[in-house]
Image (cartoon, rainbow, N blue to C red; front, side):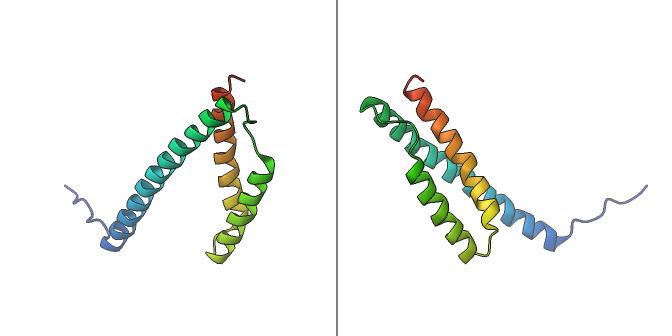
Length: 98
């Protein structure tokens, strides 16, 4: 009979931190989408367009700068933000009945 190897305590600690960060990211994304859904409902009510390209570009530039300052790949951060923005626009279009 072979013994089950003991988990590496250093790796267990890293993974626990990663799990906590992942949970925080999910909660933050959920809150962000709650707010953007309210924005979408407001835009639909006052007949504003679902997308705001100027705002999107400002946000992407701002978050690229933050990524660079945080030593995070700005290309990755832009792709991540673009994914979120596209999803928000889709929700806003649904709210507007488009």
